[in-house]
Length: 625
Image (cartoon, rainbow, N blue to C red):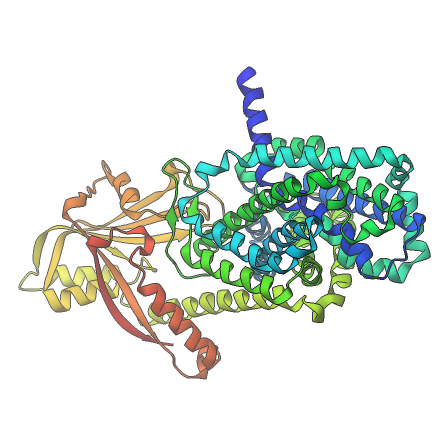
């Protein structure tokens, strides 16, 4: 029992550090942006109304939607949009057209994550560093350069992994939440009537008296739920109970106290609205608070960067991106990975966002569209999981998801008003990534179909080769041929026979099968079928969270009639060269060229499928689509 409590405490502390970094630092800019928009006249009733809207937004979207409802949809313990997509697609697998639409929607939502992933670190770190302007106006010119330096330093550290510094995340964020709660309590004590805003009456009254203004300011109100998707995405790391405990016991109370403390401050001093968070603190504490806020925003950014690595790996596993270099930064935790291309792409995009927008207020105009659209997609997928996966009655599945869908769409519609003020930026990133993913998926399908149509049946080919006279020479050792279709003769085998005129003593034809589940257990990893004459067809099954390792998987063949000795095994991979054909392929010419470049780059990756680079024999053929 004691160990269980200790584990729960540790996981809860970890959840505070990783899961709630983004939403925990949203107090830096949310209230400032709501009143800074110029749409809300400064009156006591309006302050109560805005505070009430913020509190009930946190309650409805974070507490009820994500913490209570969405966290229930775990896919073998895993969460996140990819896990939800897998659950929804499996639930409607007997409806292929609907499944295809859901896959498209879910992948688009995943692409929007990258757009959100650029804006969130930029606005968080920039808003923290802007506290220097409160210390002295002379620091204003250094805010943008210092922000860029902090972010670049963060990305430079990624290759080292988070294992070493990750243990400090929880304690630092716990200090952060205690600090913002204490600042809130101190200011609430100066004006305790501000707590009236906890009543939904003030939110409803404000909306009723100012319907147009209420709709417009939702674009700023949404800032208070920055990072809400992380609640679900990080479930696989911490579990449902620690995430819920961390929210209701630490994060939400601290956020509520801080927002109401800011409200109490501006009621006493309306001038404080220009930066109500930093003005909560006495002058001597502002500089230490800037340092703490910067650390907190860096931790929040770290969690998002790590999430981008994980999502990219999952999307690769599902076949929507080419395989790119993935490095493991921990020998114990396989989930800790580093993807250089994603790391530096994010770094450039985030630095560009800081330099382009130059202030947290300008970045606030860019934030919201991507995240609210993601929230809407989550509500849609949740309905199909409830209705078709868990077999809820129609009314029981529709009632909660429709309620949250209406809220999400309302927030999305409000944020669309910011489209030309900066909202185009994350949307452009999302659409660009979506185009790349769908191009890769479509191109690979075309190549697969072409190879399948023109391919030679493997069993018939082996029978012909083995029965030919004079007999073909068999050389010692094992040849492993990786092939997309287990029934078709790999082009690598054809090239080997054509040029070397030999066949290995043992031949294994390996097909990687990626499934729409997080994990495939070791006991279900390998399937083997004898083809005769020491030839074998092997399927290796992986979930989207598994790490492909073909040599390790083949060691499971021991004792099943097929022995693989690493020192005498050669790996052959058919590296098909894509050649764009005519427009009858179903792809526009520019997409054919894009896919061709991606295909070329993927073929050049030395760690393709994590095969040993010193045993990989590269053979290619041209495929015109």
